[in-house]
Length: 103
Image (cartoon, one colour):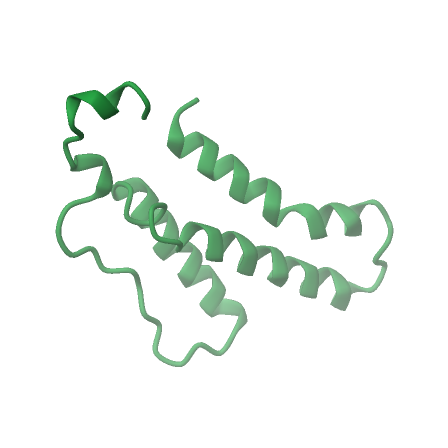
């Protein structure tokens, strides 16, 4: 499975757990739904912004910054600090021949 697809699916699965509970009827209050959604957004943002995810390639970089922007709509973040790439993406780094079989 492609690393990008795996990481995205993992983030979606981790972030949707609270929302699944609400849909199942365990949280009937709209405020609970809102709080659970924010927790889900926080969770997927933390995963996506971790080293090795956000700086893997340009797509993952943009995904992280998009989630940070979405988070700013729901929270007072003060000065929004996007992830800024310095140097090369991890996917652009040439691996030694003996490690390519294991990646």
